[in-house]
Length: 400
Image 1 (tube, rainbow, N blue to C red):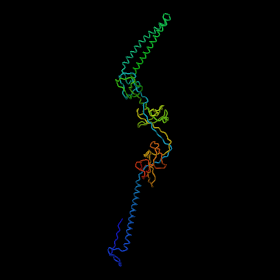
Image 2 (tube, helix red, strand yellow):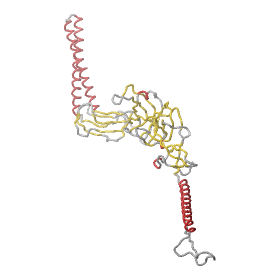
Image 3 (cartoon, rainbow, N blue to C red):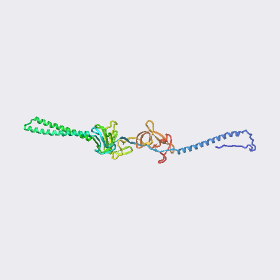
Image 4 (cartoon, helix red, strand yellow):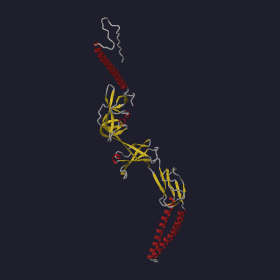
């Protein structure tokens, strides 16, 4: 805005005009001065309004250019949705045995260590068997003596029968000889049983591997005094592994022997074959156990946790959105950010609460006031708020 300067030269006035005295105003001057001031004020106000309007237009244009680009998805209406449940279990050896000494005694030798591979029949440990060998000799001596006595008793019985036929002996003598022979036969059987028992204890004094496998654990040391049934070794077959998966009885009914299934152990995906469904529920977890034989060479060890994913289709209507489009809301609900047109390219964000029903592979089935054709922000929801003006990013452009 400029300044208006009015100057009058009083000494150069047309002839016939009365010279104005300094400090005095005529009626004409008094009438014109207010009009000039009003005109100047109107001009100043108009200039201010024009500048403000131009600034507003420039700011609006700049704001439109600075609208945050967002990526969007359109809700997909469906009547069914895949449901995947995960069931867990443990990897266990199909063949495992805890070995114990049958006789009591002192451990004389330990032949293997934990982690050693063993073959069927290989000796793992030996008891001190001196007393057993002595008992075996003793009973074998008694057997020999009894056999000799039995031979004499049989001969005596035969002689008494011959004398009885000739009338030189009585029936009582024959019966007595027969009874003696039978007594000695019974005694011999008892002694042979004792001998077999001692021989079995001698055999059991050498603890052997029941199958090809690995020594998983050793519970005795050389010199230990063990009693009957004391556990000594645990041997398992690491080549024949199975997963025991617990699941609800209704879910387990979907599997049959011979079915091929996929499992996940740690970060590894494995294949296996269903062996059987155990006939009763686990009393602790109230689940039915599914036995799955893992393929040979599976890079897992007993004790690892195995997961089985069971896929079904649920009948449920709703809308499917990317999981990244949902944010937490109150009262157990979730929220999505819907775009509504607000200008040529601009959109304004509106918050819509929905119910999360199911999820699968990064997609979520929701129920709520959604419609086909809506634009829902599917990423970067932490950067925006309801009521904010944004623009839809071009595909492959500057959106998230």
